[in-house]
Image (tube, rainbow, N blue to C red; front, side, top):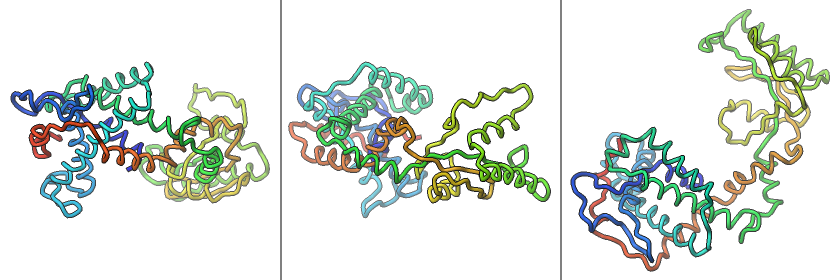
Length: 346
């Protein structure tokens, strides 16, 4: 699982400190202790929720997933094992963060607090049903921040395992494109039905006219501006064209929001050569541009590039730390109490 996926799982998980039902005895209020730190049982419960979601994805059974088998064991056992792995990694990250002498900035704390409020606003019922406290949610968010900061201390500039600039540049050039394009919809004004006959031919001819202008050497940004002006509704103004890169779009091979045909075609295109092509929904007039430009876009994407290159390695490292935990006292009573069949998932 990639680092970004693990962070997302932690952010979406619930972290509970109150009982599932009835009165929680004191001896099951915590799941583990190490040093001066006590990990609430709710942290482990949140990991059960996350593991349950993974089991649903594995089996495709959202109704009776606990009746399934995964990797030769019952889904219940699989969920329990995965949740315990997550809890071990939670503790390992807490320990490593302190060992490295890292700190959480005020900005990170503010972001965590904001995300807690955001999650609460959408999932309050789920949290409440499981006895969730906002302060407990913050533990999971802050642990995610700590993982991310450890990752940065390893792989970012100046880190102990800094990713070489050459590797970053190579990945960027192989996995991103810079383009400008005009998409001419083949659908009617309601965006529901495909055009036919003369109406469709009219759209194609319009796209062809812009392509012809591009081939003739007109500035592509100017074409885009002209197109936007032509489609602007009455009384609507279009921002003036101020630079040739004003409409640049940078996309990765796995970017969402772009039709598959568009990405495939543009990644194979030559830089500087206008193209005219189509898919089921659009005619495209497009231009692939030099990717690096002034370098600012590359710099702004270094974080996501480093994550793509090193997240798997970091996940394995974190798992190794979790396997080698020392000085941790586990509360077996809590582990026995909080099982997959007792968590409220819906």
